[in-house]
Length: 220
Image (cartoon, rainbow, N blue to C red; front, side, top):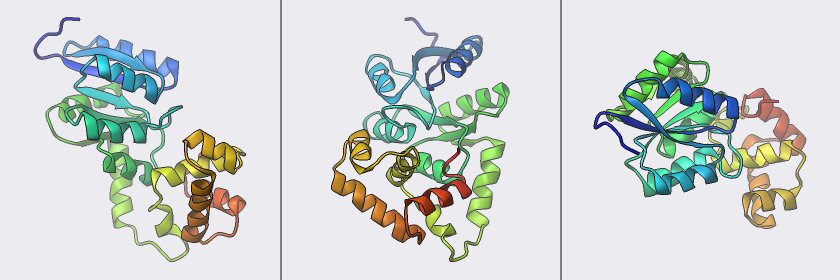
């Protein structure tokens, strides 16, 4: 594959085929962009990154096999020259913080315009960070909000692993199934569950899931 010197090479990681291919068609039509790979999950993306060297990865957060948050962390550790822009419909501050903490250079809502997405790609490629207007307002609100003592502050401090455990609990999985899905031990799952109950000051998994839905961490 031959690239012009000024071409920004882009890889798209998105589990929804229609969105993935639509984005690729739209961005490929722009003179200074070239799509060099499409991935439907985290494993596919990591395999592609071994073959291609993109400048930008548009990263969906919620993907099967390996989450966008985890893949972003791996890219930041092993290929820090690759710049990740989170592209997600999950605009909760927890997800924004986790993506940034793990190395993302930008965060774009799936509701943004194609013009804004193009701006984000060029700005991040130049070495700066970019937040779309929707995300900027959420980040500003989060930083200026004063949390009460009813569990609000704790809900925003959840780790990506704790969020994964809550999601799997909400799907009806039991400890052994969660352990298998996350490649961890039963004991580790139970420790995560215990920590979650203490951190969020709830008595059981049902209350935990209810609180996660109320605070926007779970979308059902």
